[in-house]
Image (cartoon, rainbow, N blue to C red; front, side):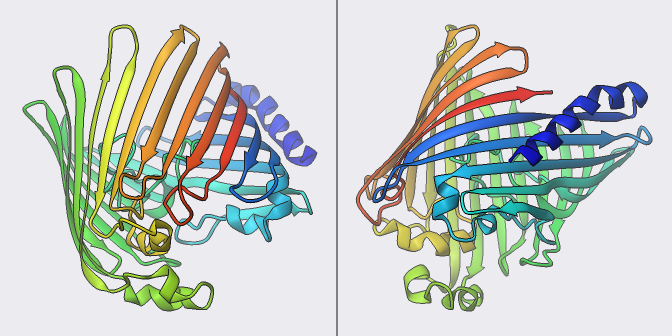
Length: 396
């Protein structure tokens, strides 16, 4: 762990010098330390330490061209490493053309891993913008569940990965006006199936409208998303209708897990995924946010059995219905508290996520979180246990 910490400190120390020497460069990032204590539904308590550093570099050789490289390095120590066979493998994320990561070391109770998280070239000419490489292609308007995000489906429970996973691909945007554009995105997928998408974004009557279509998982899809307000509160929604063929992927998993257990609904068909979102901030800073998620391919019982099938389809939950509710409030100008919960109304499992963040000084935050899962065995959140996390984050 000390080797990663030393490397991060050297990079941070060099940052002001780089900025002074060459204004066409921008370098920044952060360093975080997390301590967590967790208790699985069955088993002893685990205590873990995580040192997480990120270095973001941008180069502007001309006014029209920029290059971006972002690296994240993590050092782990504690019970999770000891209890997880081949721990490093759980950290690897394939953007399409490989993980672009390296194991720094792996011991009985410690491990280190570094990965190229962004690596892309961006060019603009007139109304055109081209982005090629490992990047974040984020589609959708909702704050939690983006059913039309075909390239980077994500989980709100992955709270420490604020940048979200990347994908290797090509993105072309043509701006037809100040509030309208046509976009094309393509992930060739050397290690995954290709995804192709086109999106038209425009504004009408105060609402941003997104219309999209393309091909994913060997099937066609079409979608709609919007963002606007009602009486000063945010109002958003997303709808996706897609053909799918899940049989092609079954053979990849049979040897590891068994198709009967993990693909109870494997086959071909048409699915519908939709999410509705509303939020409002009161004058005293009290914030309320509600979202509702529906998956036609989700199930109403034995939800965990549907997890892999849902993952192959790109669903955000293996359940038929999900409800998200959040409340937050500025306790003082420097302290904000909040809590959100996700509830499965059919199997009655849920997770509660309270948080408290204190902005100590500029760029230095102290935070505490908790993940509290509850439910019967086999339900969506019944196997999560409990976890409490304390985090120190310094941005530079």
